[in-house]
Length: 240
Length: 240
DNA sequence: TCCCATTGGTATTTTTTCATACCGTAGAAG
DNA sequence: CTTCTACGGTATGAAAAAATACCAATGGGA
Image (cartoon, rainbow over all chains, first blue to last red):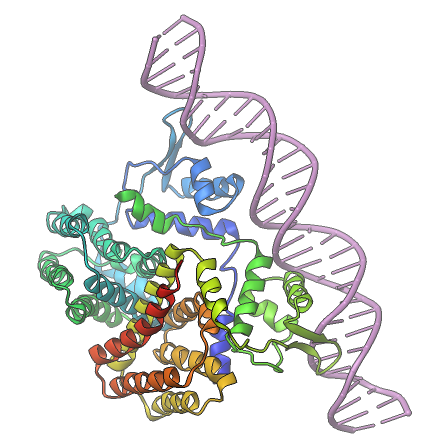
């Protein structure tokens, strides 16, 4: 039983080599829509600094994404790496395939992790006294999701969820929530965006924001839990 | 405002070089008491595999810990790297120094992060239906803390907290809680272990376990929050 | 007593990653 | 039309890390 705890601490220092990790990171930023279609990534020199890697390694990663069709790289001033990726319009088969591509254990792990960190973040934000500008950010993100065109829905939904974590002011917590979201992106992207689901999600989003603004930690946490449990149950249902 | 979200995703891929990260990881495993005084670390070959680094790099890390007096390395069969570290008996000055060694922002970040993930973990565990052996683990860890000799208190307290995360069955969540704890280890180790504090903590630990076993997520989360808020407030009070 | 499995110690080579400097290009500003 | 400049593109040498193979010591068990 002590070995389990050793496992938590002596887990891998490196998830892979720098190149692979960079490709993964950039790809997720693209799939998450943090850099939307048509927009430009930061310049190689800036990105390399932010990612803490050399420009050479970064270029290799960008090149492989370019060859995979995710980026259009243009030279010269006002050039850069432009995102070509458009979120796919999912059909039913994709979801089953996506779910079963990752192991059942990994799926459960990711869903549990996401539930924990997002509930925790909402709870903390509800405990915090928010200034007017923070409230404004939260409300704006909420209305952006509600007004979203179908093609933009996932992206703005992500932005809404991440904003909650970011507003806590804890970069570690924000990173954890981003990481949790990354692990289910492919699955969420494979779920068709349907009217009734969106309407249901809108009600839940509203409940989350209301609880946070009312300073109700338990309510905020429960609202997030209910919201996430919906998609979690859906995904679990597709396990072979 | 979009730049903040970019920051969460395009954060550093590498925290430092493999050597430094490995030293840090091992040192924290030692300071946390996951491998207690007199015990042996896994063999170099095993460790290198688990940490995902080469044996050469691992050896450099072990060597620097040996030279710093944390390890006693012996060769031959039944040899290995034995932990020499004994938790210090803190005096008042140490705490102020330790608190102000990390920035005020970093302290707030670490405390917020810890609050979120530990509350989330307790909440999830309270939602889960636990089988008898899981209940037994939780109760045993609780009694171990209560019966702990002063020198073992921190170590068993850590074990108790980590067990909650591990019992959720999510390695990601367990790793996040371990990481959160790591970030405040030095601070917690600098807090004198006093009778009244231990008694107070024992009551709170009991409340946490009771809420979890009763299947009360809100109660479990609130109990953890109250428990952590105590030390958090203490630490914040030492900020210069 | 001697063996030998298990452990740390060392040496060598290859691969990855980094740091630095410099080149080529496109587009806006003059 | 020229120039300036912020970009990507390229080259090269050094450093870090990994892979591999092999050496050396220890101590329990045959």
